[in-house]
Image 1 (cartoon, rainbow, N blue to C red):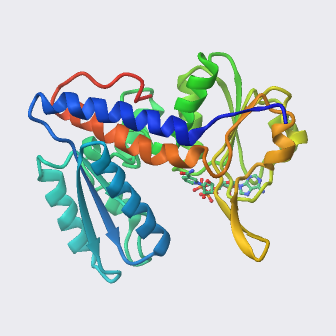
Image 2 (tube, rainbow, N blue to C red; image 1 turned 45 degrees about the vertical axis):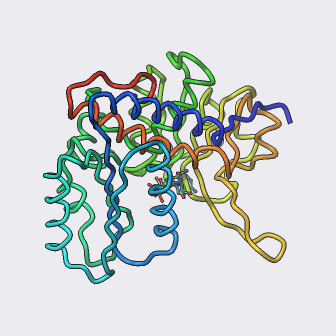
Length: 295
Ligand code: NDP
């Protein structure tokens, strides 16, 4: 193995420490940032995420508000709750845990959140602001990837970046962020021709596909920086284990640097949620934004 390992767990701990410092500084102004998380239904994975979000929110000194609603909650009830959270000055960030049960219209619900409190960055206004290079709330996972890339590479200007995947929550905002940092960006997807060749162009390869170990080492340009967003559970020795979208062993033999799974992008996502909540709080009070925690 020749690649440097980008340790997302350690980096996320640094980001959370920086957020905690920002929160402590706000206390001097009598401000305590608050993050409200809304969970509808009993999806086990979502329950785990919501629990760790709540724990880490409190750990950095913020207030955590959890709203757990039954799976059969009607749209009007959910929209009423969002309106209350939008109006509540103690709440600076509102996150509705996805996926929502099938009878609820996710777009309608997400777009009911006040864009200034939309710490997931999924509101259509924030999507537009990001796309036009304006100050937005930026989706947490791509923001975490960008922070890791900047930390590892310094300036990204002029680099060839290939983003594998075009979802609204990872691939598209990732591409916008890389473009914002002056990369030459290619977005690849399931209809892309000659995918291996496209990937081999990349100085920066971000894989967000959801297919276990799909990217082998011979798709990677020697020395490239590889960010593996994928989280896939696969059978392993009678149990299961997590793997990324990149075949770690063969990729690490070629890449210059690579994020592992687990312990790479995953921990950065919640750290960036907390960073976004701090940013939203500073903006709401007209205070200077924390440095290094935004795009
Ligand atoms: P989506 O399923 O929404 O999008 C997957 C994308 O990959 C699509 O654009 C799809 O193309 C593309 N794709 C699928 N198969 C292929 C293929 N064979 N060749 C090329 N492209 C392909 O997934 P998400 O973006 O939501 O998530 C991607 C991965 O990242 C998942 O493993 C998910 O678990 C993980 N993830 C991790 C997070 C973290 O915190 N670390 C947060 C969010 C996601 P097309 O559009 O043409 O169908």
